[in-house]
Amino acid sequence: MGIKSGLEPPCIDIVYFWDDMFFSTKQQRFQRLTNPWRDRLYGVALRQTNMNELAEDWVQETLLRAWRNFNQLSDDIAVYAWLLKILDHVIVDDMRKEKRRGHIAPVITVDDQDLIKHPCLSPEPFDNAVQAQLNEQISDAIQNLPEGFQQVIVLRDIEGLNYTEVAYILDIPKGTVMSRLSRGRRLLASMLIKSNTVDITASMNKASGENS
Amino acid sequence: MKPTYENDDQKWSDLHSQLQDMLAGYVDDELDNDQKLLVEAHLSGCQQCRNDMARQQVIARRLEVMPPPRLSTESHRHIDQLLSSESISIKQVKQSIKARFVSFITKVNRLSLRNTINASGWGIAFVLAVVILMPTLPAEKTVKIPMITDAISEYRGLEDKALPTSMNQSKKPPVNWPNAHLLATWQSTIAGEPAQVYALRSGRNIVFQYHINESVLFRNPVVRKAIAESGNYKVRANKLDVIAMPLTDAGILIVGPTDSLPAPEKVQIESI
Image: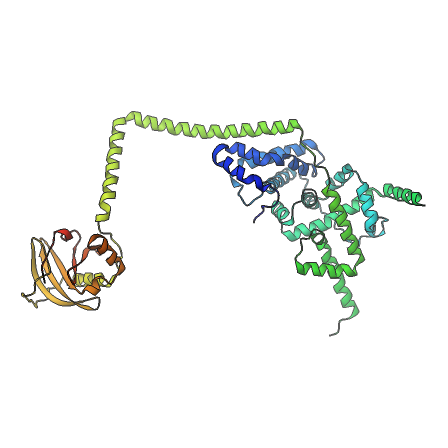
């Protein structure tokens, strides 16, 4: 599967080509390819745990595994997608050790009574409510998402990868990426408005008071 | 059968629950045209799905601007250290393998330096000899040229039989070489054309000589090429050697056991 996308700056390829041919060692090449993605890997890791140290461990382990398997990286795979796939395996391995996997994800439909009855049901109030949320609140909500939903939301909505790339990283069909994303966003929407009902109602009242 | 109201309702409800899983794809423009049409048709009549789609758009937009957390400088340094120690350990393994190989070679050389050089010298000489001699040796291969296969099969067919007795001493073989004596001659067919066969005794071997039509000789491109390049075509098949070469306005095939044929340069071509 061709996973090469806009994740890499193409104009630097030619420079890298000559560099690879004549100057750099394997280690230098590895560092040059992976260093730009370290922080973003950490970001993805940190969305899946609330422990900074654990996220750092995952990133370290990911880069070590990547270095050991550096020859598996071929030209048609974007470096970042390849690293994310390794990170996913690292996290799965770690989670399996801790027996934290296997939670049954709740399925929430568009007909969910909480969603329908909520004052923020319609698009505009919902938009206001979500924009008003702090980054920390959103991060918390993402961390509390069930695992399958959490990964697709982080990879697609925060990291900006397309469905093909997400499918490659998580080893799932594109259709599954789509359904998990639909359900995950719905669940996240429900979590965000529920956690913030009081604030939103207050801000709505305030806004209507100002208008009158 | 006319669908009942319940059936339509059921259908709509099924579609409604199926399409909910495609709303993200619609928002992210990851659907194909058919799917997109289907979703759009449903959205036009379903407020709840429209609202859900709008909420998904809001969430996608909000998450897009989430600031990425950064690893501390200390963590970066720690990872650098880890990676460089890992690559050093790989290098060490490689170097130790290389060192072992070098020391093995040194030991071998020390043990018998002169022998090694002598042996390698003879080895090179042998390889050169093989390479130089190769082209002159006829290759053992499957021959599919009719004139060659005909000549070979006739030679093989007469190996354990008496040669034809219809001697005609007035006919002389077109090609002669020292120690070759005519035993018999008869009329045969090569590649569908008439040919005169001369059985000769050459030392301890029996060699057949075929006087063939010029058009038969030059029929095969491989033979043509070989004759153009070196004056003759040689082939080894079925433990026999065959040489084909041109005469003034005819062709000659010489068939005999391997290594029994005269060198083409040394034969004497009689005027016919």
